[in-house]
Length: 421
Image (cartoon, rainbow, N blue to C red):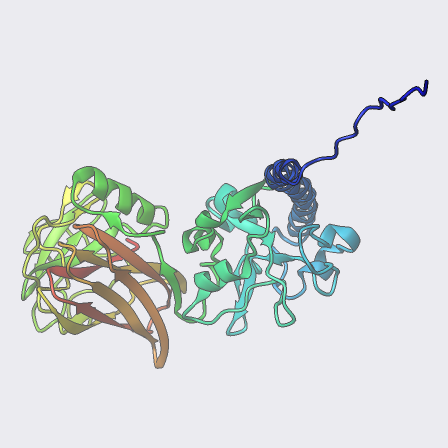
């Protein structure tokens, strides 16, 4: 009898298409989760190395200052002056290798009219807030970029912002004058960050500081008034100038205020009421400071608060819509050359209007400079305020003529001025 033998072996099954696709999907999901984590970890390591580079360069800059009458080096020669070479000038996150002739870092210094700006040539003792004054930062790198700030009279702080590269996880490393280094998120790389580094001791021509706030601020309450005027007070801008009516100018200082009735557009010596709140560097009375084109104000509800006090009818020009040019001539009363700051502030009262206050030109002696410092308010909120600033070179015998343009779209708004006392 024949025996029917059957082979009983194990059947080998392969993966089905669905199983393969499922595994691939899981791997893809894990990769999508983990790769960015690995990427951020690598970038964090590069950022740490970059911070170390900046710390070393900052130390070299401070050592240079201590060896040179406590003054920082000129803008264009800082790399040579600090004898920095090699990898310390190369940020690991930059796509271009940094070197002595083209470092990956920018020195917060510039030049205008043959004079140093920002930290160039500035003394350590002249910096009032060294822990807040940027000294070095991650720099933008293209063929035309320089390792310092190139600017003109209209865009000083804006150019500083544009020179910094937020290449570390949407932020930049910055070294400050007190020697510490920090990571600054891109949202905080604004004009106001660089204002403490401005060289107000060596200004030959009027210079726009640009916006003085990071964005519109409230002006509708005592607390709001303290908040926005405190930002200006950091830069010693503490005396506000507005209007009471078509012929009365209102000054409010940190400790006193006063109303002055204009006589032939010249500011009188004595106030109509209150105290003498003029900026101390103004000459008033016969042959003194004056204003042309001033029309007072319609009065706002509410009026903006200044340093916690309500400013009664504050504008140099206020309207429901319209434009106006105001010319202010300041006759300096100073013993020698100094530099003063001023600001124009734009205010709205509802969400329908746009208000722009512009310090358009500044004439010092016989020389006119276009500065175009604009306080632009285009806010969706009511009772907001915005400010822009200008550096003024002040010297005996050189009158300063400031042209201010106010533009108010449909709605209730206005603008006023503020000065160093």
